[in-house]
Length: 110
Picture 1 (cartoon, one colour):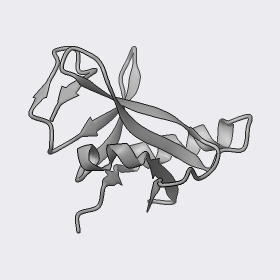
Picture 2: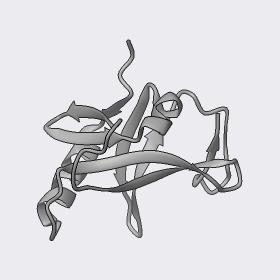
Picture 3: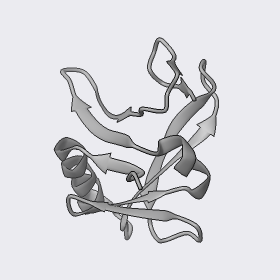
Picture 4: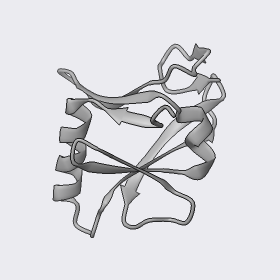
């Protein structure tokens, strides 16, 4: 079975930084999808303070990523990357299931 999400080295490093700088107890990041944006869906990330019933837990490169159960089918085979540019930095999702992405890159369609 294909792993739901894999992490690039940059993404794993950034998640470790986020966890270590969190003021609260953080065990990883939670990734999901929600309806919205030009193309219909967008990625959602938040601090994971604990395991929620139904979460899929991915451990990759020393970090834990909690996947919202309703997002699993949309994220299967996705690589999560982190890009830092001169004026911005962001997590980037390379999702083989996307059939369309809006021009600004904030939403997608499957």
